[in-house]
Image (tube, rainbow over all chains, first blue to last red; front, side, top):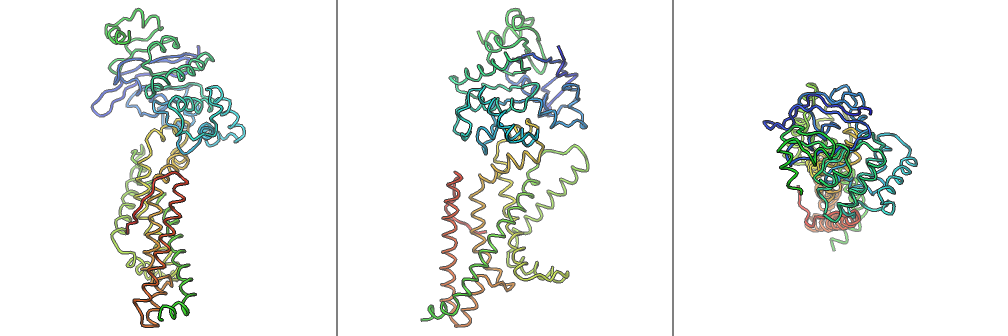
Length: 243
Length: 235
């Protein structure tokens, strides 16, 4: 398997607060990785470091061979190859559904409007929203918004998709449709790194689980290994709450 | 009756005065908004640039903008008009009163709207910028395609309000001999020694202009789907 992201000696703190302590980690093409752990253990921060939304204090992160922490690297170019789905959807509220999925393609990748619209339509169809193309995004339900956000990211043809607690802001009845969309994406071979609190989903979709505790990767292994035979008491304790 | 005499002899001048008043307030508001968009964006930058030179440039820029806003908002437009008109003439720029007037209203409106634009930008959730960045947009694209359109929409009421204020406040530009509405009224008043009547005519016209404008703006804002202000305050 090809290495796509690699992290060395990553350290990050907010003021006095140490968020990430010396992270070493590699991600490979085609992997579906779920990062689990209690709130405040650095999961989201780690994810946000991967596309440079958070600056880092020390260490090295490379994506596809490019050092994204170097000021010489065109971070905007790197970001076109890394899709990001946020907890709060963050759809552009000044655009309709189609425009949300088109704008990055035309203004950043310089695709023609026609090509961009076709790609956007294909992705909206895949997330089951082809009927909502011309709808104002504010009128959508949370689940629909998150699926548009996924289609928006996919339309850039990213190599990796990052998901930052994609179902945490949703009403319970809408969680399923988003997870279903993500499962389809995983089956198609998309490389996915997902921060989530949905344990059964993580177990089903992931081929690798990272358990984070106190700014460190405490466990790293297959779902079976982590969920059935965790090494640390801390992990057992955490998982007990979801049984 | 003196009203009829004034209107009979001055109706053309009044129409022209209305034209100048609207020209000054419309151009002033639009140019002022353009100034405010640029300055408001710079003022709203909170990220600390990595390079030292950019850090210094940003700090200097933001201080100068604050100075501009403070000075313009802290002095009457009437005084500003006189100073601009004569200062630039002395420096060899032989501009007409109208040109000086357009400049004054624009600079004045720019100062008031800079704060409005900055507040608008701050009202747009942080996630919008993060989503734009994640698609690979640079700061300029994120700002112009995603953040500013939403910022302006939330501040539409204040921007419209500024236009209405300008309709009224351009009356002070009579001091540099622009024949806007108030200037015409004063002219008529002196011709017929009837200050009260001439000013009442001017007042009715101003009220008509501001009232219609506020109704038109309300229609426009409803179409955009934004909240409106009812009471028009003055600077």
